[in-house]
Image (cartoon, rainbow, N blue to C red):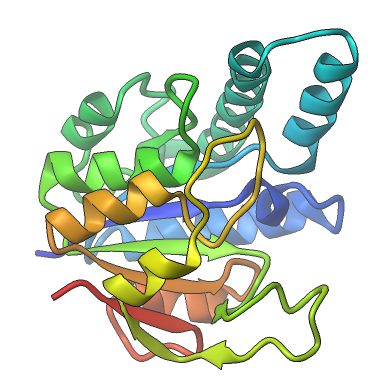
Amino acid sequence: MDRVVVSIGGSVLIPEKDDAKYIKALADMLRDVSKEVEIMVVCGGGKVSRYYSKTGKELGGTTYQLDELGIGVTKVNAKLLDIALGDAGIGKVPQTAEECASERRIGKVPVMGGTEPGHTTDAVAAMIAKACDADRIVNASNVDAVYTDDPRTNPNAKRLDKITIDDLEKIVYDEHDACRSSVFDPLGVKIAKEHRIDLLMVDGRDLVELKNAILGKEINGTFVNSQ
């Protein structure tokens, strides 16, 4: 049976666009799919996290302190999804990647947020995948695929349907900054590469696409081959 880790961006969960409706539909889909594969979920912080980071920075906070604020928001988002999952949730937010991996089982979906300053929830997703020898990591963001540049700011950005993990490694940034956004955390890419875990990058608000990615079916997003 496949094991899948889903990294859901905070900008997907809480963009203030019918959030409750989307989260309920997401939870229903995860509950259904959890009967076929073992799923573990990590939630990002999104714009709420960036708000606290910006405000904290203006107040003189260090990068470490700003990361702590962001991690707190990711855990709130994780609890929100756990609530929506009802009896398919585990009733708590795991604090480590190892704890989240240990909670996996058919019909249950453990959901967690960040863990410690210095890396993003994408890296946490990769750590969980490493801990449970997952078959793939699904990155659900507010962009529908990997591009050569940010398509929201560069209209000439080229969409990439299938790339290697080495290609992705060249695209991601190589420095950490609180609440900085990228295609995928470079530490997460490194872990996926070392442990040969495929990555699927999809539009997180497209639940049909997200479900297909979780089940390992053909997607419209980007397939990142780790082999």
